[in-house]
Length: 546
Image (cartoon, rainbow, N blue to C red; front, top):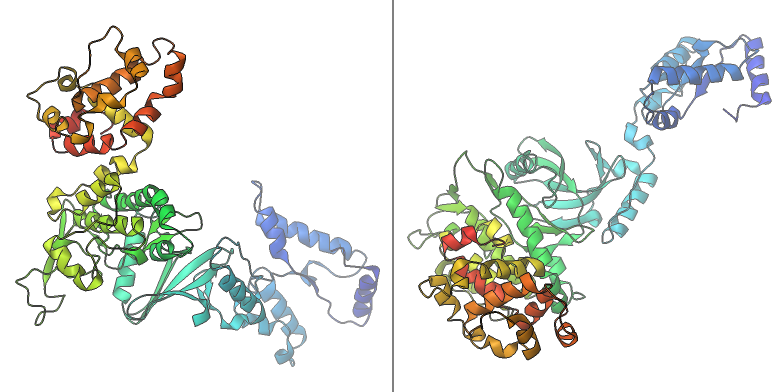
């Protein structure tokens, strides 16, 4: 209202002196609305009345009344006084309706009048989004509106392509949030299934599951699925030439944990869910570098209390569990994948996650070999982990890749494996096991003690402990033997009694902290202990931190 000058007032008086109609149009009411509605005491009618009175105050001394003041939205032409203004102009200019300045606005799409907002987050897609925003500002008619989202179906804005004509484009919401819009042309049923899975209460808005925002279908011919925008797929992340094998192995536990967190969300929902199409291109990486499960087109929500789903063959060749492949009795030359019936269990997802683990830790290699032999090797249970030397990672992956689904761990067991746990958790496992009665008494009848004492790498452990450390820890206590079970007891006693008195200077210089010391001396002990304990249910249930 600051722009309303004395000259404007004189113009009003001149118009009125000629017995002509004068309309005072106050625009940009949206700005007032957005700033005021945040207040707890906000009332829209009170706000509008205040603006009208302010307008009339500027017109004080003229004959203009409330009926000549019009409050107009620049975003939504049909809102507030727009219709009343249109009718008022038509009333005074009945023979010149085609020249009425407000009529064209009513025919425009409201979104084309909006100021384009963009909350920049993505780094990889920034250039595409920048070009997209520029296009919205200069030629908005090329944009397509899907709910509250805008997209341009031009190949230059495409960031991915799936099977059967599915394409993914960058887009923006009305509030500027970056999204990915999947255009589905042939597999509309799968798009609807994906929407239902992502919208399921137990899955929706979970951290390591792609966030679903909107779905729109056009019969059986076309559908759009709107999701959060992510930077890249796990495939692109792993194969990036700027990311070294050493870096991937350092990040490995974090990456694998996050994939398993997503799988845990599915497997622990009620009813249970199976992804059924896990592979490097279906794991996405967000701008913070976190892993997110995506592409739920063939995922399944199991009937209540069911643990197995039987259907036609689905999934991606080379990334399917053994039990999900056609068996040797099925003649694939004559039977379609829809006719051949196979089983899917939650352990099926686990085997494929094992493949993904190896893929990450070897920078793109597969535990079942080259593509041409992959399906056959999966079917026959032939695995090859020669490119992975880390014994802890090898143990986890071997466990997950067991040919028999019943021999594979569930998602909780995977997450408790030493490879995915902290150094403190692994140390606590050793201490807890060392406190068990069979270890303390050197029970020769205990199968666990027997198997521990067969571990060749630890059969001469006493020679690896410095004399000063052993003397400090064995004063007034019974002597230890070279049997590995005694090593666990020694670790337990060290943790329990290290601070009973102040260690001598030479001991303090050797052992900064018991956890760090034993981790350095016996790095593979946690995984060896874990491998033995998990074969004995009674130990699984009573050993803490297992």
